[in-house]
Length: 314
Image 1 (cartoon, rainbow, N blue to C red):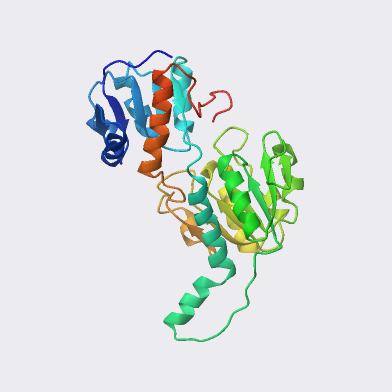
Image 2 (image 1 turned 30 degrees about the horizontal axis):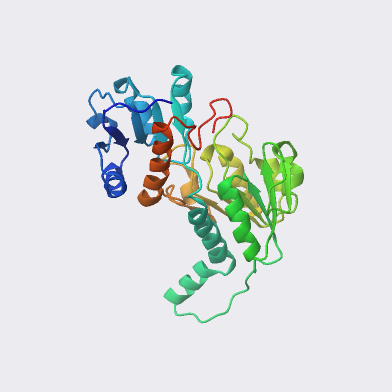
């Protein structure tokens, strides 16, 4: 791939100023920081480091665009643009979310199983009472998606004494995971599992994958954690599973519509815990390092890392 023109590199993200500050400390140069697409006039930038939604909104103003480095792990909003502009290259973010996702997932598991919420309530009422707890050791976790994030979660799960099963498109073996099933054998994979953790991307194959049938196959009182994409679960089936005790808890960080509408029943469903898509916010420092590594490849005409395959959807 030939080197870029003299146009500034466009950084189109709500945190554009912070990202550019990190870039300037590592490689001083010409960067255009834009926090929102509405602030952008027609721009000749060939390279954009940006959030997918912002890039799609501004696409008509970016007619010279050759490469988009996403600031998000998920790049699904950019897929239609790839279809319209087959010459465009899109790269994703990989390799930096594992530790953050692990903190989130295992923080919630510890809080739920060690009854930390109940103890906080007792503290407010000045009650001193030991409650029954459910240690995670020797329990079974199923991880949907065994890419870099899933493999990191599996390694952490081992430290907690959990048995781990993975699920992927192919079912190919993955180092550090006891067994990996193809997604076509999802029912067999989840049978009797105590924790179901999804880090799946949004693709036609993953939409509505976690439904009533899958949830019913888990161990009674299992915990569902979704840090992948909101389209991966059937909302009504999750609510029903919580109401009937099939699930003891569900932790959801991603949703079909974000922000979650005020009228959505998730807000008031007992034992459902939601967070506003914060499980792994991209650190500006790590993002700058990843982008500059790919920029060096771009300028040298080398293949870019983490290139998105429009056919697979990630």
